Length: 318
Ligand code: SER
Image (cartoon, rainbow, N blue to C red; front, side):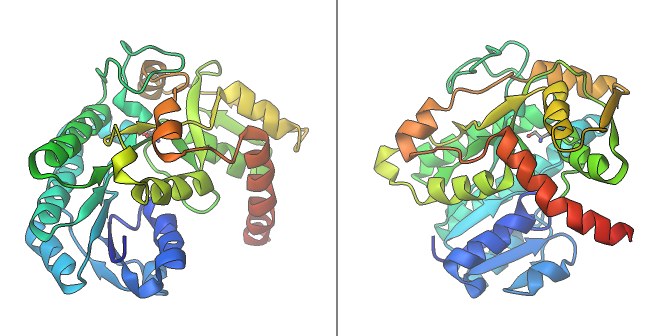
């Protein structure tokens, strides 16, 4: 990885991954693109407005910047996808197909995220294996499984270097997700600090895998830099670092904010999605094939989230 293109850089992963990659590979070697103008991404490296559904425009950016690796991060998340499945399919798969095709023509490697959402109600629930039944019941999940198959197809058919990670719900103190089923685990920190209360849309007993953003960023680089001869799998690796329910994260926050109260107003769409996803993933293959090891768990992440967010939200409030 020397010259990197990020497609969808303004989103949840992209806005932090761009800065992280620029720190490692140099600002001018990481080209950030998004469908919308994004001033923050233009501050420390090249930024271009790019509609990922326009393959000609994508190819032009790749050629002009001599890109060798494409991070395709364009996706509508699970809950918002259910409101418009046709649009979710055309955006999620359209951007991926263009990234794969442009990468094929310009000899680039491709990273694209998959998700715990690629699994469904028929997958084993606890310690869900790397290779198992994948029959998701959301359009988001259908796109993720399709994306995994396409990634492997391009590797097999064209010898391309395609790699992917099945991310748990991502928690960050910088970027908000927007439209996902796991969003509650981000919102809860903001509301706990600002109002000492939070109304959760996901039932209190539903376990889902979650991960803190610093582990996400490191995982992307570690997988893309991994020795290809060691990779038995490519698209896509289970990774895991923590699994909890709304009740468990609320209890953890209460240790720091004793008068924090959580109540529930269940969103039936999110409930159905959350219940269809695994409780926890088995990440043995990622550990064995490229040395994956998480650095954050729920107590450490909670401490860090509150430490970073509290002064910032207090300053905004003042
Ligand atoms: N965080 C995503 C969502 O909730 C899952 O990958 O849609």
